[in-house]
Amino acid sequence: MFDLNSYLHNVRTQVDETLQHYLGGPSPATHISRAMAYSVMAGGKRLRPVLCIAAAETVGGSRETVLPPACALELIHTYSLIHDDLPAMDDDQKRRGKPTCHVQFDEATAILAGDALLTLAFEILATAGSRCASEDQKRWLSVIAQVASAAGFTGMIEGQMRDMTLEGTVISETELESLHRLKTGRMIEVSVGSGAILSGASKPQQQALHAYAKHIGLAFQVADDILNVKGDPQRLGKAIGTDRIRGKNTYPSLRGLSGAETLAGQLVNNALETLDTFGNNADPLRAIAHYVIERNR
Amino acid sequence: MFDLNSYLHNVRTQVDETLQHYLGGPSPATHISRAMAYSVMAGGKRLRPVLCIAAAETVGGSRETVLPPACALELIHTYSLIHDDLPAMDDDQKRRGKPTCHVQFDEATAILAGDALLTLAFEILATAGSRCASEDQKRWLSVIAQVASAAGFTGMIEGQMRDMTLEGTVISETELESLHRLKTGRMIEVSVGSGAILSGASKPQQQALHAYAKHIGLAFQVADDILNVKGDPQRLGKAIGTDRIRGKNTYPSLRGLSGAETLAGQLVNNALETLDTFGNNADPLRAIAHYVIERNR
Image 1 (cartoon, rainbow over the protein chains, first blue to last red):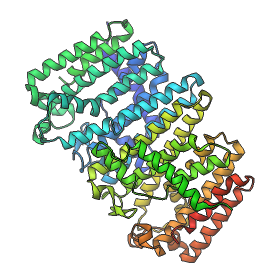
Image 2: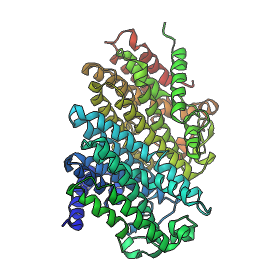
Image 3: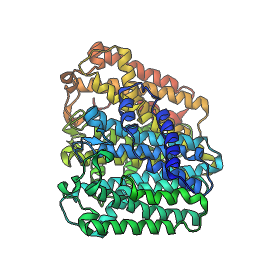
């Protein structure tokens, strides 16, 4: 019987150690690296690294190979949170139960810390790629391009832009799905995809895992919307009810709470089906699919 | 006789066409891409692309190969200007003779446009690398890592951090040199270095060009400080005298104006000496060394 809790604990410990190493150890030397480490080491589910590693292991890859991209994905995620929390954006005071980066330091430092985390992610990816066997280097270049595309102005950044401009406007569920796919979905897809590609997954394996990632990416967002209605602020480390106050479009606002819960369950079932061709190696991905909508309940 | 003006015109035209292509053509489709294009296409000297291309041509490389990195370097430069101009940082209203990005759009858009330009730079680099011959892919990965390192928290970002925190504090010339090397020097070094490496420069060639870049990188900053004292605001497209008002450490503040001018001339001579082993192919780099301190006079 697969034990997700010990798997998550194990992966997170390894990811956190590697992240801390990249960020200059337990006592970073400069103001900017302390701000970077403050936000990265503030906790978080490490969902993107976990997905990257679990996807690699599903196709028989090694954890060591994908630890650098797993960490790079978490750095990009953290940068996006720091910038989204800024006064000019969502103006959030708390994140992961602690003051946000611009509250703890200042706005200029938070902007630069975000910039630096994004930049460091690409340095880590390219450095790991330059050290691998020459026949694998094309894969690394392709993964770097895919990560940049998912994070960039036709991916995550466009999602954040739409999220802000659509506040207070009622949109259709199709538009909401498209927004979420940009804002969080593309990065979740590339987390799974990079783990698979760098582990030498075949095209059919890549396609199956891509479908898995699309389903759980959306399920994750639906669950996030639900948590903003009925989650426990203590466990979440941030306030609830904020979506409604801001006039955000959410699945509960479009479908009602129980409609949103039904959808989340369907998406998880869809995700599980895509894993049918894999054996026990895919058990972590299966357990993560359930976890995505059950976390913090 | 080498004609720098027509060389610069020629390179800039090619770089601008390529930049516009990367940014979605003459009419970008989204709000965020319009903001990105607004700042990138606002003009500027394109010094980093010119250096990258001239370095490639010095060692017999082709312009086509290094156009993508040349453009990527300009995108990173523009991102750094957009973020430096933000209210929380230098709070500048004008750049390249036009309203800064956050003035023309808004702060949130400017933050995201900067993020997107930085991300796009890495997408361009990795995509170009993934399409090249497999024996060259290691070079591309190494260049991506070097660009990220130069732009990151031990390079340009640390420079910007120090620039802000040291405002109003008198520092030594050694500290000022170190600040500038971080803030602008490392990116100028990697502009020259990436052009050279991707064109197959030998180690001694790389070393000579690296020394060239260090000298002109500093000369450029000294000249910039001088222009802030006695430049023509019309031609510069930004206000002068701002360094003194802000209490910035500059070469004129440490050495006096004529002392700073003497230093700039020495640095250009040092740069020219490093090119002694190259033939006529290095004429663009030679002319650029003079241009760096003579621009806008």
